[in-house]
Length: 205
Length: 250
Image 1: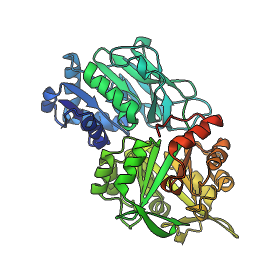
Image 2: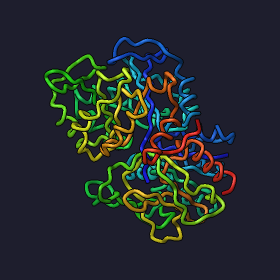
Image 3: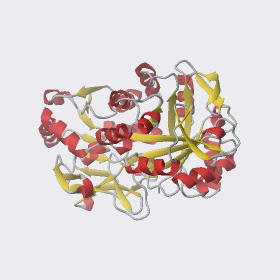
C-alpha cells in the first residue's frame, strides 16, 4: 500500500487519482500511527514551507516520517513535499526567517533569484539528468514535467542531485539520498511522463 | 527550458459546455467530462474551466473531472470566499482564478495569496475596447468597474497573484485573433506569467501573441472545441516557428 501524507493543504485528490490510474492501492496518512502500514510513502504539498512544517510537527508526522526514512521505507516528496526534505527553508520578505525542515536530504530552500525570469516558475520544463539510478533511468532524460514554484532546493552535495531544469540557470528538479527522493515538479500533473515516474518509484524503489 | 504553454478553456453552465460570443449568447456544445477526457488524451498543457451559473464549480463535477485530468487544472467562476478556494483546491483544482470578487475586495486576493500561496491563485482580468478606451469589466462582462486597467494589472501583481489571464471580451468566441496589442500594453511589463485569452481562430494567432515575448501562455476554447485543429497541430506549428513547446500525441 502507498501511504499519502495528508497535510490538509494540498491537492491530495490528484495524487490519489494518479496512483489509482496506475492500479496501485493507496491510503491517506494523517496520524503517525498510520505510517507503519505504508510500504512506500508519498509526501505531496503546495504552499508555504512554514505552514506545512508546523502542521507536520503538530501532528507528530515529522518524527514519524523521519523514523520511516531511517527504517528504509522509500519516500517521495513532491513539490513543496520535496522541499520539506531539506535541512531548512526560508520564509518572509527576503527569506529572512529560517524554518527547520525534515533534514532528510542535505540542502536549503531559497527563493529563486535569477535575472530576467518571471516567478513563479510555472509550466512545462525539460529534465536534464545528472545521474541515473533504478528509479530515474535514462528514459526520463529530456522528458517534460509541470513545475509551479518560486523557491528552489539548493543541495549541499551534488551527489544528491539527480536532475535539473534550465530556468535562468540550473534548478534542482530531482534530489535523492538513499531511500528518500524528491521531485520539484508535479508528476501527478505531468501526464504520461509523470505517471511513468510515479510507477518507477512504486515498482523500483 | 520553460515551454510556451498551450491552454484550452471550457465554459460550463452547470449542465453542459457552452460557447458564445463576447461572453453572451451561450449555446450548448458538449458534455464536460467527455471534453476533459479528450483534452487529457490530446495532451493539452493545461486546462481552465469556468463555471458560469453563479456558483463555484460543484465538488461532484470537480471530482469527476480530476479522475481523467492528469494535467494542471485551473478553475474559475463565482469564487467569492476563502472556503470556496479551499474546497476547489482540495478536490482536484491546482489553481483557482479570481476575478470579480477580488476586484470588489482586494483584501480577498491578498488573503487568498497569503493562505494558499501565489502558485494557487491566478487572476482573470477582462476588458473591452471602447471608443472611450480600454475598460475593465467584471461579473462575466456585464459590469464596468471604472477602474484604471493598467494600475489594476499592476496592483494584482503587487498583491501576489501567481498568474494573470487577460481576456479581451469583444474578441471572445469570434475566432478572429487575440487582441495582442492592447493586452501587451496592459501586462507587457509584468513579472508574473501572462496567459492571453479570447479570439484565437488561426494557428498564426498563437505565433503573433507569443512573438511579443511578453506572453507566456495562449488559451483557446472555440478553436479546439470546434475541432479545427488539435493541440498537437498548434505545437507542431509553433515549434516550426522556433518556439519551445511540449510534444503532444494527437
